[in-house]
Image (cartoon, rainbow, N blue to C red):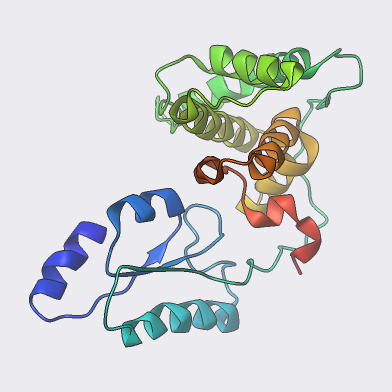
Length: 236
C-alpha cells in the first residue's frame, strides 16, 4: 500500500494510511501514515467499538490536510481492553525466572518445550500453515540465545536484525500454541496471557526496557512489545 500511494499521489490523488508495523512504514516513507499501537489484524482497535474506530479513521483522514510529506504520526490512544473473566484453559504452568528455573535461558527453554506439542497440534489443524519462519534460525536456537543474552546482561547490539526476526517468530509461536488450547478466546485475551503470564513476555519486556535505556537511539527501532503490554494500566 505504501508503494501504491506514490503512484496515486503522482496522479494528483492524495493518500493516507494506517500502519501496524512502524519500522516498515519508516523504511517505505509513504506520503502520509498513521501508526497505531494495536495487535496485527486490528488496524482500528477493538472490534465493535464504533466510537473508538471512528476516532482512528478521523485521525488518519486528518493527515490529508498535510500538503507535504512523508508524514508519520503516532496515534495517541491504546485500544480499549477486552474485559473478560475467561482465560485460556492452558494446562501449562508458565514459570518466569526466579522459580525452579535458575535463569532466563532455563525458564524460556522449559516453557518452549511445554508449548511444543500444542504448537504441533495447531499446525496440523492448519494443514501446516504457520507464521513462524521470519528468522533463518530454529525457534529453539533463538529462544536459547535470547535467554543467554538476558542471563549475561547483554543486548544484541551487533545483530539487531536477528533479534527482531527472532522475537517476531517467538511471539507467533506462542500465540499459535495458545490458540490450540481448548476453548475459544479473543485475540486480546491471548495477548494478555503472552505478555503477563509467560517467561517470553517478561523477557521481551526486559529487552525493551534495556533498549530504551541504551544511549544509542537507533536501538528504539527494534522495540517489539506494544505500549499496552509495557503499560497495562493505561488500557481501559
